[in-house]
Length: 183
Image (cartoon, rainbow, N blue to C red):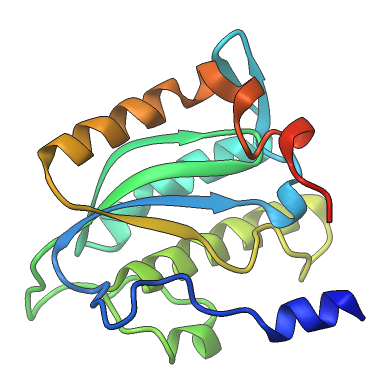
């Protein structure tokens, strides 16, 4: 019963009234379902990606080719999450809106927005990983994602440094299985 109450009481973690489709840079963190270490393991400050981790990395890298309204910056695939910097460019009247395999989700997301990009990315990765696992429909990702609006150059540089150093600090990471608070 407690789990049902928690689900019903979930609220948006987005900035109220903020337009996530406007041009700007965003730091995002997307965690796996139940923070399961699907994407590889961190050893001596580097992440050795599993087959699933390589799918995540590949899909992230091609995202800017599919969704021309975004530009990708620093990113890292960790054992159970990904960190990345995504910039939304000025929108042009001509161009692809990106693929949107989960149409029911995309109806509520503005096209060419951060949320639309994340939904498409998660959907594509989930489809490919579940095809390999032979278990369609299984969740790969947590329901939501964390985002931080990057406000200036200093914030951007500090975020890049955080991403670059994340594998070195895996043992202290709040997403490391030993550090996740059980409720």
